[in-house]
Image 1 (cartoon, one colour):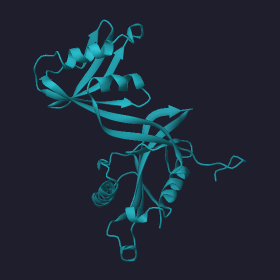
Image 2 (spheres, helix red, strand yellow):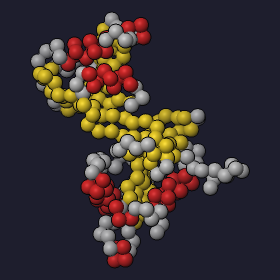
Image 3 (tube, one colour):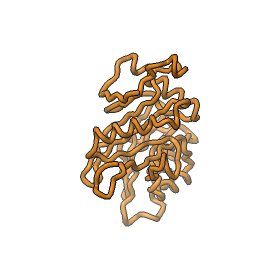
Image 4 (spheres, one colour):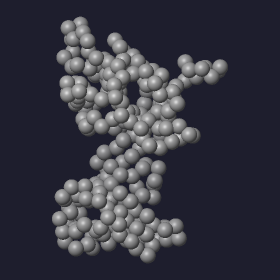
Length: 242
């Protein structure tokens, strides 16, 4: 079995990738998106279907993209991997990750998982990103992309015709710890004029505990979670890769 690296996919390859993602979703009870919006793709094809007894075109895929951020001067890559349920524990992840290491030696690699575990294949857990949602007591009008207060600001965009996306909430340092964040949200979401928006969604980093506490208090519930794991290639004492 060989590992193939591609920067784009044709229609047949896209179908094969999506079939494997959906199969893994069904097996693992996850809901990974099948939109293939990635910068690069690694794959191991099911070349011998009669021998493997599996109908899917791919046995394993690894996909990633550049985050646009750096750590210690190195670009960060975010990656996710899918292994056929009947092929797990047979070294396919190692094959994919070794190819990734060889091609991106000067990058910081992070793996994304839909579940939170203390470790993923012995890679240490870093943090999680939670996706929260709240159904409003009454629909409200669009508050504006940026709404300012004497003590802070809040930022919204229209996610769809009935859902607002809250992508920023800032309270000035001297007003923090005084309930001003809650005051801003209540003004926008509970006291706003009657309108078309029935829900609000947002994302929050698990390391931002004050924000998590505020949104939970305001009735936001976690709908999904992405967990991030640090992946570093092991090195020998002489500094060379193992």
